[in-house]
Amino acid sequence: MTDLAWINAAITSARPQAVGALLRYFRNLDTAEEAFQDACLRALRNWPANGPPRDPAAWLIMVGRNAGIDGARKRKRETELPDEDHISDTDDVETPLAERLDNADYRDDILRLLFVCCHAGLPNTQQIALALRIVSGLSVAQIASLFLVSDAAMEQRITRAKARIAADGAQFETPTAIERAERLAAVATMLYLVFTEGYAAANAREGETRAPLCEEAIRLTRLLLALFPSEAEIMGLLALMLLQHSRRTARFDANGAIVLLDDQDRTQWDHRAIGEGLALIDKAIRHRRPGPYQVQAAIAALHARAATPAETDWSEIALLYATLERLQPSPVVTLNRAVAVSKVDGPAAALALIEPLAKPLDSYFYFHGLKGMMLRDLGRDAEARAAFDRAISLAKSPAEAAHIRMHLDALASGKKSAPDLRAV
Amino acid sequence: MLYAILCYNTENTVFSWSKEQEQKVMDDLHAVQEKHLKAKKLGPTARLMPTTAATTLRKGDTPLVLDGPYAETREQLLGFYIFDAANLEEVLAFARELGAVNPGGAYEIRPLHAFYPGTLETA
Image (cartoon, rainbow over the protein chains, first blue to last red):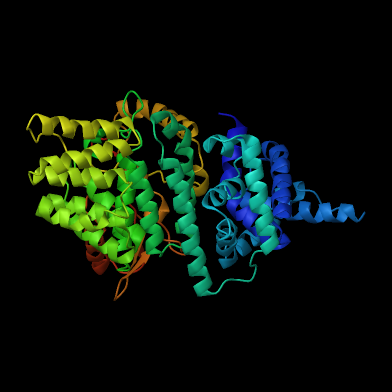
């Protein structure tokens, strides 16, 4: 492995802290990014010769800040500052800076940097693109390929988003506790968007292309949790991402098509990621402050703990969906609760739960699929067939359509042997 | 004489490694360990989960459970246990029992990503 690969990893991991601190100094995103770029170029020259500094982030902040000031001074034809050789070798200079960075500023710098990307006026796709550009440091071309759009289109998207932020300005005062909590919630939502953007792949090829989005979301959420170690919802969010991402290789078959949860080869799940997710849920539960991410993670954990679909603890899942319904009411959450209720209390109870959802979920594949199964189980075959027909017309993948066709075939031959359908 | 080798590194950087970098390091480490495993000189090795998965029990009359790793630098690492528990509460209960008879300091409770028993034979 080359020096360059290690330097890149060190720069990537230092980036949120360094750009965050430079943004605080210069109060301008473009200047902060330019100063950081400058510091990175100097690091590539300096580190292989002098060895990497003990604290790469502190080095990059110091050199970046000097470069930024230097740039401004050059424009004013003033004297230059000492070069970075004097910074990297002398522990004396580095140590107090590193200590200064160790305080709360550092936490708020990273949170601010993430928070500027969650500007409420920006559409989700722009928020995600901006975070990947500014916080993660991906190139425009890399982001464009993740989103399957042209470089020019992505360049334009990011430029627009930056202009919007520059026009409104960021908050540079140290946030109050309430502001900090609000920023944290907004950032959590944005990070989950990054994750779901990667997770929502229709086939294996797309899944592989977009997996870096999931991995980056996990990395940034881990960073956020390290900064705010007692935030139960951030523990829940990280657990949720890890548990979902643990199924990445089992989610697609040899032909690249989506495999539904019940049909997945559970030995292919990433048990290391599952272990970390479960450990985080254990920690979160101790706080007794349930939130939507924790509850969703707990549901994912119950699926992850079951060695076979038959061993799934459906009554616990039904309770958790009821909690989620209270915290975050939505027709889709109720539909998911109905799936669990059907396993525990039978089809009549589940059907009663989903009948009021007919209007809001009329164009939702899973609604008609579940309705069809409940009607079939109650012996109302003609109505079941109609619901399955509607589901097939709404199927978004061959796997979804194949499942419904299996149910229709079973109905035609008078059997009830087809396995259940559940969201991936 | 038995020795423990304690591994330190910058966590943020290690978790920014690409899959290829990670795999390369793991393969190289296993290659180094191979001959010592064959010679039955290498005992249990473990890879810890990130510090975000850690919980700390600060010992005292009323032990305090804190989120995150043990961050103080005044105390020194003096030993460790490997314990099989169904969940955090069970391992915390064990740590509390230990703490009751061994006052002072703290226990950092960190789940393991991987555990290899090794080939060391003890008398």
